[in-house]
Length: 63
Length: 336
Image 1 (cartoon, each protein chain N blue to C red):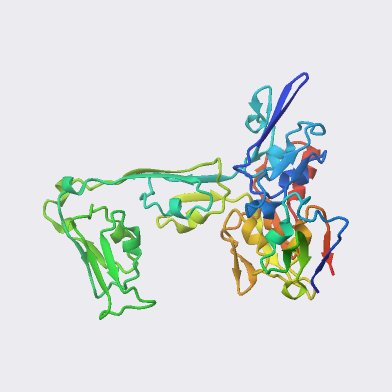
Image 2 (cartoon, rainbow over the protein chains, first blue to last red; image 1 turned 120 degrees about the horizontal axis):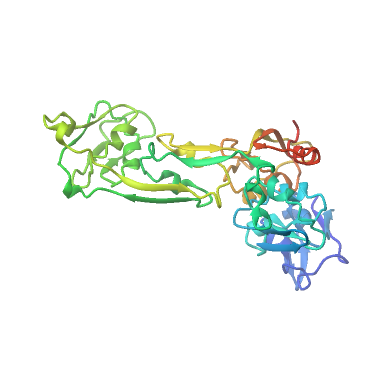
């Protein structure tokens, strides 16, 4: 099912309080840095929802 | 850490010590003015963000002190004209305890090694083997099951066991030897042996009455500053010298549904925030050992699936004299 990121809310690494907290939290490699921005790799997502809960901008939700 | 104060007819001062805090959020729940906020626990626990677990809005805080009394871990203190309200008779008080009985303690140091919060101060002074009447330690090989309890507990490391088997005795491949030059004849091996296989030969000597029994001196103290009543120490203590009273009675369950499933291997937020080392991920699922859980509830709100169900049926918070405080503080009893 994976997750999706609301581009308007997302801090896009540069403006994220923790410079890509979701990338650092996800141990499945389902959220990665790509061309300086956050990208989702849906096939790696385990639906643990840790990123959804911890995003400081509430930019992540279920896809 | 924060430290805020306000002066009027009285001078009130509220301090928060992050060192004691487990991130349970009890203070946030009871605050009548919603002045306290819990920080992002999982990123903090993983070292991704450096900040206090709890922060305060100084402008809306009314310095009532309810948060400091509700906190079972003594992270918050409110003083009125310099006196901590926890020391004022009319205020509620937690009847919790963590202590080591000096008379029972054999200064083995196991509690010190196991404490997940490094809350135990430990020091041991062994007698000098040269000052002691020499004897022998005899281990009956017919009775010994090579469990290695004695070797683990021996304060001087004088016992060597080879080929510890998984079960029962295997006399061909096992050996147990005592290096008497290291032995201080404290008798811990004898005390700990489940099979009664250890004998101190000097105890059968004719002059036994005249020999002063060797004494291990030491100090083992639980620091109230950071103890969170997980009770690892009291569970591991071989002589039951430690008393821990937990703040709550109750249970914690993992209840999955079709949509909400524990993804322990990917997530493990519960394990990361647990200050009691009570949570493990077993076969991909979160397993909580209630023996070590203090029912603080930090893992419950850290769980992104919201499938951890906490119930607290009783608490050790007593002497609640105000009706309104009683109402608020009783909200800590959930699922009763």
